[in-house]
Length: 382
Picture 1 (cartoon, rainbow, N blue to C red):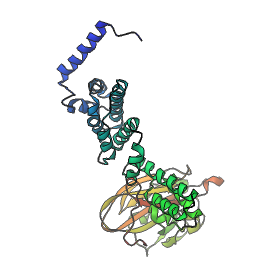
Picture 2: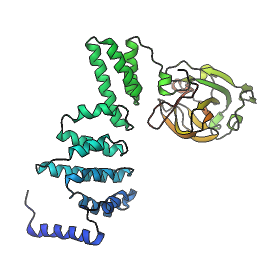
Picture 3: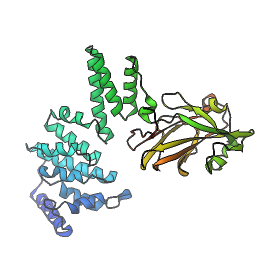
Picture 4: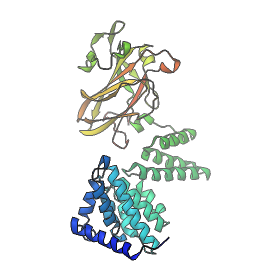
């Protein structure tokens, strides 16, 4: 590669001098200006020029300031976070290529500090592992309760590996204990399923509905009319008030609330079994949830049909789509529990398609926090 000629180097010096003079930025002493410029970048190129100028200033920082730049990722939008990641990587690469060192102690402390954004913490961890091969064995086990799903996943994976190794060595009880810990700490469904399969193979009972927060006891009413998919925006009486003793005109005659309990491990409610087979139909399912305290909560719905969900009369969301697949946590509807009794109401709509793959009329719903930790009612079985 040809060396930059003298005039090019002079131009670069002039450019940075111009940036310092016109913006007042002196990143070595004050990161607020350039960090704010990058954090202000928006969609469709908004603030892009200022962000690029700020990037060039920040990229000249010494490696000792890496965690200060990483802190800028806290609450940053995805575009700004990408800019800051590039800054951090440029600083680290320059330092390592020059034979320097990264601030390992600061990076480790940052990676373990859950108050920071998971994106920055993950990057700090990745940089640390480049200069300290012992870091993963030291840090990952400490992240078993981490609010970052990505970092927590690594710790759970380690515990699953430990369980498998103990089982291979013939330490059955220790393997069972390790799998149970992994199951309790896991939040990703693939890891949960791995633990459940291993425990069941070891003849261990697993209360998966309790583990994941699935509601298994419902009151169900229907069918109401959904001919020509007309029922999604039509408010039938259960949407106005919940009266378990009430009877209403339905699609094929009078309907009333019935009790229904599902024994499915993932809380699946088959409305065809509960109400009989219906096409062009609407059903409602209601559940009372006695909360220990007021708190934000996710209602995570899996449903192959069109649906709506309410919490205490507030519509949290809905999807007017049919037979596009189904999985746990397919739809995440966020709401606010109040202390004491709460009412969860879901509306599940079946259309009139006759294909064999369009016959399912079913749903599953669990209550959890933002990272998937089950939120249980106070009267849940111990």
